[in-house]
Length: 64
Image 1 (tube, rainbow, N blue to C red):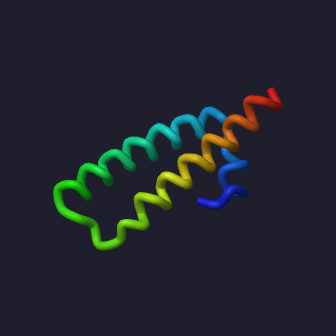
Image 2: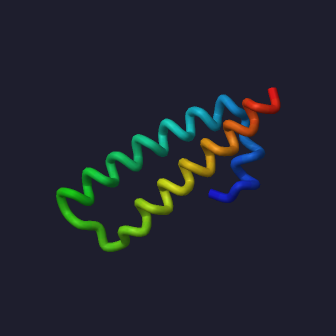
Image 3: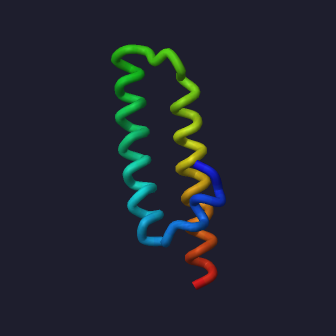
């Protein structure tokens, strides 16, 4: 997800999206432990997306 797309989201939607992505990441990690994934870079990309969303959310909260 691009930073521009994230900045356009409302703070409430962003919080919900972060929680959904965190759950998705944990499921992905569990599935990887059970049977290794072909493309493990998806885990790293998901972590970076979550971090990007949390950073932008913190910026938005700081402005208010």
